[in-house]
Each structure stands twice: as C-alpha cells, then as structure tokens.
Image (cartoon, rainbow, N blue to C red; front, side, top):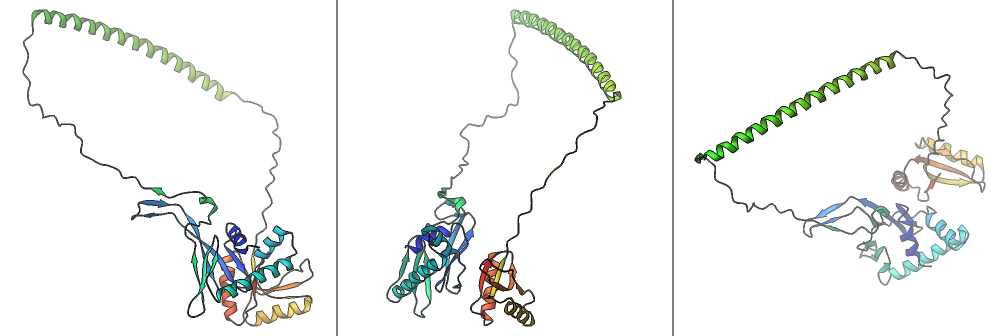
Length: 303
C-alpha cells in the first residue's frame, strides 16, 4: 500500500489528513500573485505543510483506505500503523521521500523537517492552470508629422464660367432643401396624428375594468434547511451512560462550560465532548490548547 498516494488524493478534498502517531499534512490556500523577476502571473493554489504535533486519529485516512480496499475500519487502522512504523524506521537512517507531497527528514534536535514538493497545487479549481506571461504595453510617439497651423489663405481668381456653375449648383441646393423641409413637415403631421390616436387608446384602456375571476392559491414549499455540521473535541467514550454524565459534570466544574454528553452512537457508546465548533480549523486550534492542559488523548469528531 502506497500511503503517500492516498494522502495526496485526500488533500484535494480535505484541509487536514492525519497519520495517527506520526503527524498531520495540511493545505493552506494562497491567492494568485505576480512574480516581477520572471514577469509571470501565477494562479491561486493550495500548498501542503506538515505538523508533527497533530497526531490524534481523525479517521479520514483509515476510512478512505477501508473503502478503497474493502477492509474493516480496524484493519485499515492497523495497516496505517504498520506503514507509520516503517516510515519512522527509515527516518532514523535517511530522509523519507513521499511522492506527490515532499521530503521528511530529522534535524539535529530530532524534529521532523518537511520540504514540500515544488509545483504541486492541491486547489482543484486551479487544476491544469499554468503561469501566464505578462505582456508589455508599448506607448510610443506617433510618427505622423504634425501639420503647421494655417494663419491665412490666398483667394484664387474665379472665371465667369465657374460663377455660372456655382449659381446653378446653389439653385439646385435651394430646391433640395425646400423639398426636404416639405417632407419633414408631412412626417411631423403624420406623427402628431398617430400620437393623438395612441393617447385616446390609452385613456380608454385606463377606464376599462377587467374581471379576472378568483386567482388560484399559490403554495410554495421551501427546501428543508440542511443540518449544520459541527466538530466536537472528544474527551472520552463510555459504554455506561452514568460514567459519561460524570465526566461531563466534572469537565464543567473544571471550567469547560460547553462540555456535554453526545447521543448514543450506533455501536452503543456515549461520547463526552469538551466543546464543539463550526469549522475544523477552530476545533484543531482548541484541541491543541486542551492537549497542553494535560489531556493528550483528545480527538476531533465531525457530527
């Protein structure tokens, strides 16, 4: 089983994929940007990072592997655990290359250092979008020579024949202008008559009463509101409802006022939640604070 390929697939659909006992791979979205040195516009992207502190099982990876290979959930969790042990053994001697994700290596302090693979974009909306080169706009000076200003002109002598031609042309222009004015007058008269008729029709229509009868009742069924999902930080899971109520009461006394017992699961367990949040990011941030408060075994449940 190539675990890195399954993590790569899930990061297109989830912002966080956890390998229990090892760490979490997260993606963060970045806006489109321009690189002045290369003169390229880059599309928006989601870039992968790694957080060694987030090791609690969120169930996403094991559930996906179980559905892919037709395995029970417990068997899928065991397979993931075996792969995680193999990764840790390799990291003790050399770096670990995860295809499609990046490279993991141990530094001098024994901490995992992650280098993401260049060119990988986990934003599905930007799939197959390449960088676009910027085009320069040329604003040059026009080559057309500027004409010098005219201060005066010399009148050319006119012949008698030219004067006769000019008089004949002037007579024709006068006749054409008169004909055009007469045609304009006729058009205006027709328009006025049509406008008067239109106004009479409008006045008659305004005084007319139409009986449309009784209109049918319009029934509109609004779609049912989709149930809101929430992310719970789970403190424990019990077969006994009494033990679950005790833990919820004790957490409230410790200052976790939103602690509650969740409804019974399909497997017959009663889960106790520290608090619930509308988004996964808020839940994981709160879970980190709770872990620092000496609760290392908490985990996030999506309901």
